Length: 223
Image (cartoon, rainbow, N blue to C red; front, top):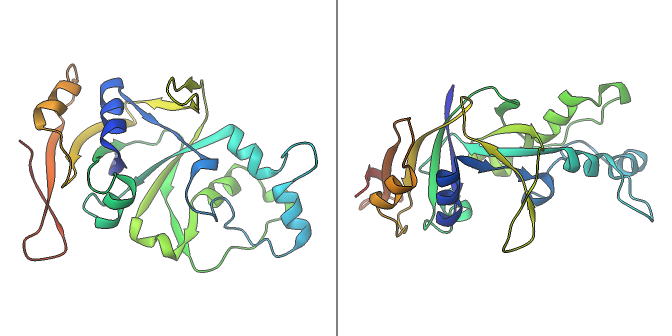
């Protein structure tokens, strides 16, 4: 097991806690334009085969991956200023700390300054897909990201937006251990304890504060 952290808005984090499940990110929604494009596509034949765009429908490798798989994104760090700003509603959100097991393809993101060579056809398998998913530009290195690569299961339709969403339940390979409230978060420890009602595991509730002397976040017990 490894302790990893997932940043979210307060609303989404409370939903995750109350419902004991975490939303699986769909590959089309990830914010890096090079997502799943960490392979060299300078050869036009390779690019066409990879994207597979025709006049009727999008039938390429990337579209097939997006239909079949999703990803859980975590960080090794819970006190990174930029991740709180980008992924936790400008420090108004919540960071969830999990003990992560080996359910699904699991590991750290590899950061590179160049895209890796296009493989031979026989090498385009699940391991190749994992390499695509877990390779990013060095520009993202500050995130210290880990990922869990999962097959998409039964969809849930969001009542407000009509969007199709996918979730994975908390369990032996996804155990909630920490709830970190952002420095600008308005929830109280009582709110979190109510959301945690019925949990058998011990979950620590903490809050981030702005350091008085440095450009850092300091972790303290939440009240």
